[in-house]
Length: 168
Image (cartoon, rainbow, N blue to C red; front, side, top):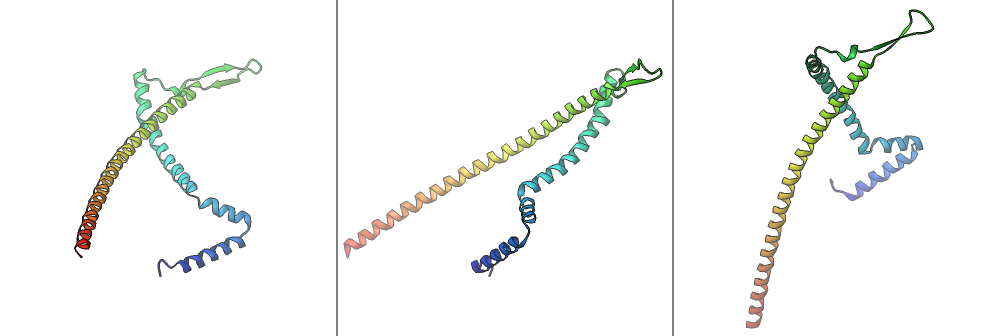
């Protein structure tokens, strides 16, 4: 019942009929959403958002206070240049370049953290691949040995059969 090819064909035919009855737009959307890439992308975005919170906390709560302390208590976000308006007295534009510096430093730290994370993942992946490759080589060698043993056994059987045939 589980591997009934006729049942599988009937189910496939029914699903194709159902898909044909859907409007083209719905059908295309259905095909798009069922692709593995869309799910992978959604998972990546969710994990990325969670990772971003961790890195932002690392930057804002741990690294930047240390950087500020080592630079004599400088808080980048408060740095600004005030340009007075030549046309209206009392008006001024505030160029908060400190926020820009803060964001550049944040970006560099986030990029470095992502680099370290990817490097770590690649290292783990290489180890897994090396182990799998070693296991595959071991399996191939064992399979070749078994094949050679089987071949030699078959040859012995053939020789024995020929000897018996000659005797008959």
